[in-house]
Length: 156
Ligand code: THU
Image (tube, rainbow, N blue to C red; front, side, top):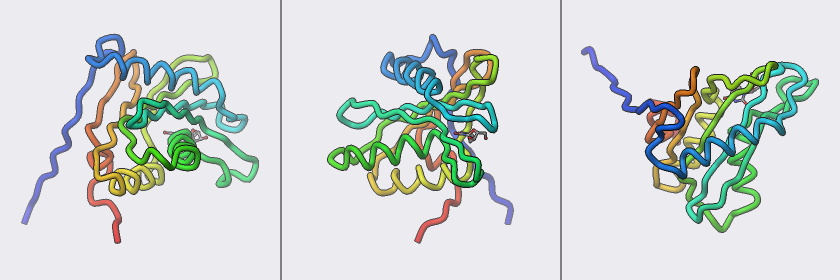
């Protein structure tokens, strides 16, 4: 039997994001990209995670000469939040942006491993974790939950 999967998301121009807190979070992600350590890919990624108490925890990609040992910005952010703020277990929104060698903002979309990690935090908190991905040309894609980024996810 054929079935169909529908994924709901929104797109806005960054300056037109309806929620000021989302615009600020995206700006923090842009700033976080400055702290990336990406001497191999030269692709700097910034992530900013807003916790339920309004705290923002940032992350960026940290690469390593032993390539698989590096970590994406998204996991750096959520692991830092989980390690530093075990008292706040609800993560509201994660904003992600890429930056190329010229310093231009670029599209960022979480890799499969990051989606799985984010999914586990979303399932644990029993509350949607919104994900804002910077797109080309100043647009932002807003996913209402990690589940919308990772259909049929692994669970046990
Ligand atoms: N990267 C991230 O940090 N997040 C993403 O969403 C995509 C890719 C990093 C991993 C690696 O350091 C570099 O970008 C190139 O793939």
